[in-house]
Amino acid sequence: MLQYIIRRILRIIPVMFGVSIIVFGIMYLTPGDPALLMLGENAPEEQYAALREELGLNEPFVVQYGLWLGRVVQLDFGRSIRSNRPVLAEIRSRYPATVELAIVAILLAVLIGVPIGVFSATRPASVADNVATVGALSGLAMPVFWQGLMAILIFSVWLEWLPASGRSPTGLRLGSWQFGHWKEYILPALTLGTSAVAAITRMMRSTMLETIDQDYVRTAKAKGLLRGSVLYHHALRNALLPVVTVVGLQFGNLLAGAVITETIFSWPGIGSFAVGAIRAKDFPVVQGVVMTFALTYALVNLLVDVLYAYIDPRIRTRYSN
Amino acid sequence: MATSTASLSVPKRRHRENRAWRQLRRNPRTIFGIVVIVIIVLAAVFAPFVSPYEPNSQNLRSRLEAPSATHLLGTDEFGRDVLSRIIFGGRVSLQVGFISVGIALVIGGGMGLLGGYYGKRVDSVLMAIVDVLLALPAFLLALAIIAALGPGLINVMIAVGIANIPAFARITRSAVLTVREQDFVAAALAAGSSDLRVMLKHIIPNALSPVIVQVTLSLAGAILAAAGLSFLGMGAQPPTPEWGSMLSKSRPFIRDAHWAVTFPGLAIVITVLALNFVGDGLRDALDPRKKR
Image 1 (cartoon, each protein chain N blue to C red):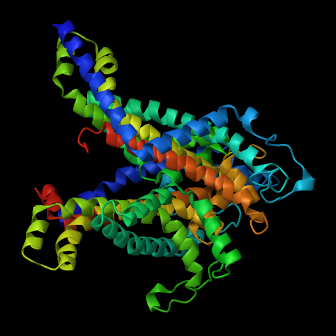
Image 2 (spheres, helix red, strand yellow; image 1 turned 45 degrees about the vertical axis):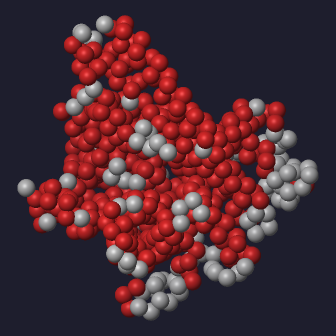
Image 3 (cartoon, rainbow over the protein chains, first blue to last red; image 1 turned 120 degrees about the horizontal axis):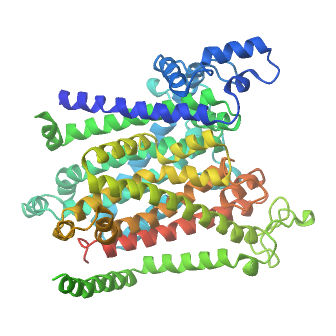
């Protein structure tokens, strides 16, 4: 198992290296002189020349990239052009809000998607199953931004049940189990989680349908076990395996969806931060956020793979010899 | 010898296509999807003839009017007819979808074909590139590319196209790998056919089905992604009627005139849903393992 985890971690390194080339390209390709963008038009000539020297802008591409990578490995992404604060500090203060929202969204998605998937699999081709299937397909077809705006329209503007935007500075305080301000989370988390609900429902339904057909499930039924017990102990446990993968994949979609969801709900996470930075050509921030997203994505995938290997012994043994 | 195998394989192929078509027709969702897409394409092509108003003509006296007989889907903040803008917006969305999927198909499909056919080092290098592109979720990759290239519709096509390369590379590669092992490929090579000829005549035709399915599904994804980028202000610029940017521009008026936001979004949902229905139907029909 340990060997598997180590190999899996080592595979992240070349990929992150590749990502760093793309991220460096963001600065290299951005039209205009980076030093001029950072300092503004009216900066004195000496300061401008000094910054060009510091960034290595007078060097050839490969050297520039090497210098930049050297700084990034030490988590130094430079300073934000807009606020002049270090990019890392800016990201650090916003990252928890994004992660929190993503976790709430994925939890909601699992809590909603798994039961619906099981429910429709146990009643295939029924009215309820058809409603769930078409509902899941629609969930996948809805653009996050439209769905978020519709949710605001219905629940905030018309019904006035929930706040339309914002997050209090203290957040959920997940650690202390005092779920303050939980109302602020409902609309953003549901908006962000809808496509995950749809994907989980579809996957749960199809794997459950397959598992119910297996011989050992029939045997369990023939033994006279209760229907609920067969479904839970025999079918669901095995059907959940592929769903774990989908949950992991969906987490990546959640990161992408966070960019739009945070923009709609004025959520102070790194997604809305990135959008503002792109608009303002604040490329050190864009670079930092993209690296953060890639690293988060890689770690989540790592976690999912390890979890999967933990649940399914077949994968563990494939790598151990 | 060569002629006899050819005459044998032709009727077989036709038979399979017939069965696929029959399977397709039996699925009501697929039929619904095809009909909807045909309508959307026709409306986009003949937009100047079917849309009731000019998409960009402003009429400040009829700002934010609710849907009525004169304006079926209401008007936006400049008094422009929402229905007409949605019809013209279909042109933009379809164009962006087709071009970006075309980019992904040519580059990604080409990478998958070469990697799957030549294997070994070629394959390792190409798949390493794919792994890097997969290191970011597709929409974030597209956003990062836009950050480098700057906003605009052309750049959105390029960005969404690149973001879709991994899917095509992987699917083409695995299809090619299966076909590559078939006896007729070995026979063609033994008969002295060049690599290029084997790829064009033998590999591509037989590896096509999963790629066709991916084209349909990617079209849906590309339209969604492009609308998302335009919503963020990175894509179509005003006054171009584009579904995502219509939505984002009318957003401040959602309290008083939700139709200017609701209907462009519905247009996206219907288009994407129809494309997904067709994609799922095609997959069921072309997949020999799934005979129901």
